[in-house]
Image 1 (cartoon, rainbow over the protein chains, first blue to last red):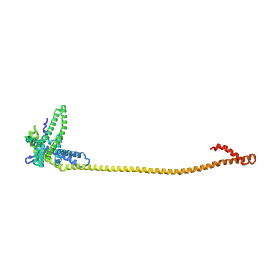
Image 2 (cartoon, rainbow over the protein chains, first blue to last red):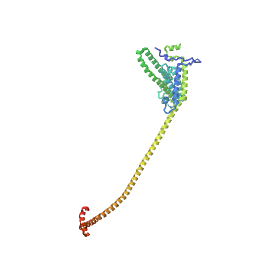
Image 3 (tube, helix red, strand yellow):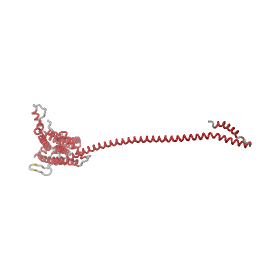
Image 4 (cartoon, one colour):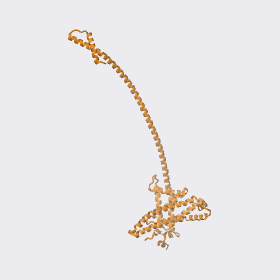
Length: 243
Length: 179
């Protein structure tokens, strides 16, 4: 049976490009990042080009996505988060398209790589922390001191809060990466079973594979949504200090 | 050696060979995506949505105005119709009254004429009636005197004949002019 992990291999496409000691060669991961971004740009460019009172299909798609993300942000982070709408929209669409392109057989899933999701999560973490300190100064540290906690428990609570805050980028990135990797690995394993069990016994894993494909499409959307909404929640903490 | 290890069973994700490359391309593509979306595409979509919203609101307003207008017009129309109906009724009543008056006047004139004629005719009839008996008697007297003359050849006194005729006519007159 083929190794289910080989689908995650990154390989160079074209020549090796080095800047100093850094290898920034164009790889299959880069290819699918570009494909996802270009697909997003094409769809939303087409969807925003014509302004007809009754939108056509692609315009409707673009406008529904816009209102969906806009509503998600205003529901979780309030009106103050409006300047960050474009970022969260880009983030949601990028993760969603990378996830969805990964669902096509023989493609590469960009978000199944921890380094990619971790970079996104780290950027969000740093950005949110910077926004928090810019908005509230050192008052932002009150985030770690929940109100209404007995003084005895306070040191413990503060430590727990700090740990949970610092683990945000890890949980955010690992959630997406692990979901994508596990799903794709499982599909590959079941696909391998279909081949190895042949025409007689292959039907059961095949039906499993079909069901898994549906589930994975759901997960692909859901993880993009979770990634975006958690970003909104973190942003909400930074913008509206609730504790 | 590391790449080989990753390919022979480990997780390729943990192979740092292309990490820098992935970070670089992620930053590049996501950065471009963000810039293009935030500067060019999203404002346009937002504008489209806003313009649609305002256009719909405008249309609703216009529709409301037109509805009010039409309601006013309908009211006016109904007023005109009811006024017209009233006027028509008035005119009809007037016409009827006038016609009745005319008819009555004409009827009166005609009645008078008819009455006059009747009176005249009755008088004539009376004259004729009263004259008829005398005439008949006269004729009867003349014819009987002639007949007698022719029969007996002598002149008979007219007065005696008239007395007889009178007597007869009175008797048979009861039969013809009984009333």
